[in-house]
Length: 256
Image (tube, rainbow, N blue to C red; front, side, top):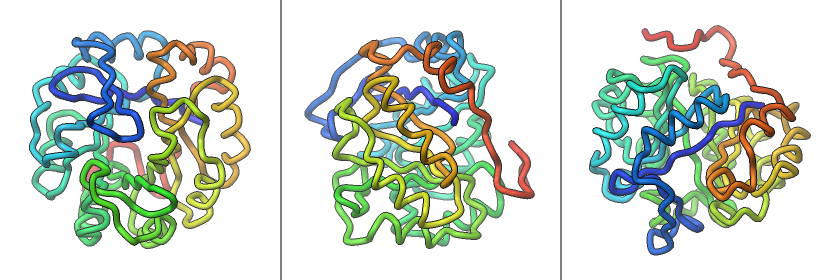
């Protein structure tokens, strides 16, 4: 299971939100590039970026920082937040990101997700953020009646590389992952699932290992790392560095 450190960007700074609330912001660093290099130094095999400004407004206000991070690191970097057009997704891929994450458009324009997945095999991820099993969009501001598992199932066979499943109720709380929700998401389709939200300690990470046979292939860790509740090097030693498993027939980084 791949452990993926997260850097959430707001106004060019490294922050975390509590349960997706923009009014509950904790700032951890004003130098996201240095933080990204530190996670790489500690052994991360991949970095997860979230453009919180982009998620809320749809405007790419953190591109300068994102470009600096991708230039500085030798490990793959993926980004989500405000990616709502084909042009924007391809722009991000062109300036060095390994994968882009589509959330809001997966609900509003699912055909765009399928088109991008066919054009860029292995490089498109669907982000499904849910409150009580229902999908939330536009930086978690808008709630949809759509069930998260139904949305996941709808992308079966589309070529989407993975689904990031975020439980908003546990995100940023350190209260532990929602194992029932993750199990349901993993069983909804054969697309690999990356867990996100609630990781508070090493035991929480170990609890996810039971879901690996169902298709949970990775976990994103944010606040627990910054609060020193999880030591990345220790976690990698306990769980292993992980290895991305592409869907059959896809090669990492291939473009058609």
